[in-house]
Length: 192
Image 1 (spheres, helix red, strand yellow):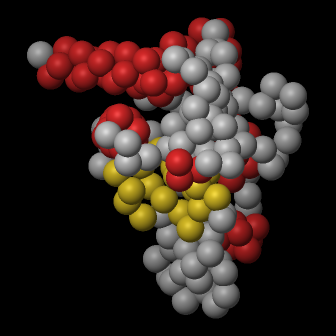
Image 2: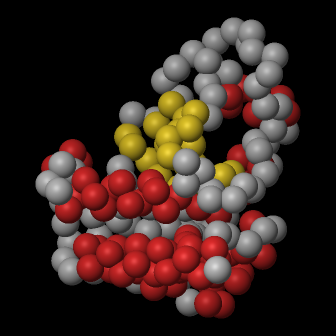
């Protein structure tokens, strides 16, 4: 019963995304210099290959977005990242979900410390390696990113601001669906 309700909510969210995103390219007022435009959706085969590379299944809502709405290019900030960078799949610095995750997960503890610490390393509770199943999904500009925690139910969205001296993943939204719903609501009400 709960699963049916959740699936109905996700289906409604997917339909709202399609109406907003696929109607026409749009320029959100907060990012007037950046034209959002959905890339063509991925195929089921491309999605399966991506999950094989990641080593874990993506959340159902994210899968539906990549399969039904588009391969990134729309959404909060500068838009959701592409699933994969077809032009250079081996690139370590690219705005795609797979390559950023694999690059972060491949860092040694020493490399991760250099990546994570901006100044003195006083935080003894900080992670020593990039957490499993936490994928970068969106850039806000100014070296600020949103991440999806695929390891927990609801997939909370976290934010990392690389401009702070004490870097840490902070809660941005309790769930991926809420994060997208909030963005759509802002857009539909003219706040975005």
